[in-house]
Length: 346
Image 1 (spheres, rainbow, N blue to C red):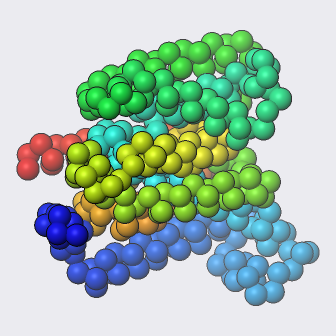
Image 2 (image 1 turned 90 degrees about the vertical axis):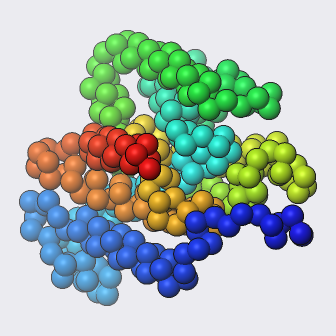
């Protein structure tokens, strides 16, 4: 207990409760605003806030506008919300267990592995074509991530941030090549596969919602349960072992949570870039490194980012659909460059 008492305070411990409460409230209001706009914006049917209100208090099955909201807009918005939260929390976990600020499901091969297996399944390769999409994505994500971890020395206890990133780049290149080969082979399905690979929630409905929310809840709850142990792990492996933390067990549980969150998201929306890399950095700027605050804030930010991005994706070339993955890349790239420049200068 004396050792714990002498642990250095993180930035989060210096932030007042009122500041954190105000931040959470602001993020929540931004998310609510994005949800409402997502239900009514960019529609040829002239949807309004009154239609949303009527859906909530007095749903009329004969109203075309209300039917459109309840059958198309609402499930798409909810799926985008959960996928954003999933990818953001997965990024926090990856950076926590590797102690590498560049770690994310996309960079460490999990997104690429899931996308590769989904693309191979679409052309009928082996047993993948008969498995449920979530299981197919989970197998691919697990294989991709395990290969990167193996090459990066993750399981040998000799983790090196640069080695891990280089292994991720190499494995991503391999898996991307296999995915492109599957697209070429698919021929008639090439356009739909390419659209899915760009990242899109345009086809999300209640069936996808029923698939994503149970898996997401398990992954998010598991991530929250590991928050305290990740705080200690961030102090170093020797300190964590001295305090009685089973490092291998924590890492394995965190990897399970990452695979669950990433695979279910990729199976529905495809590999969406930058959410798992950018959001953890922004969250740490806001609340510090304390994972009990970092994980919920990252979930709120990720959900809000993807819903706003989907809203922008609909309006870029309305009435045509633009993949939301393109919007997140356009937002994420300059933001990440700015964060990197500010960190270097400071």
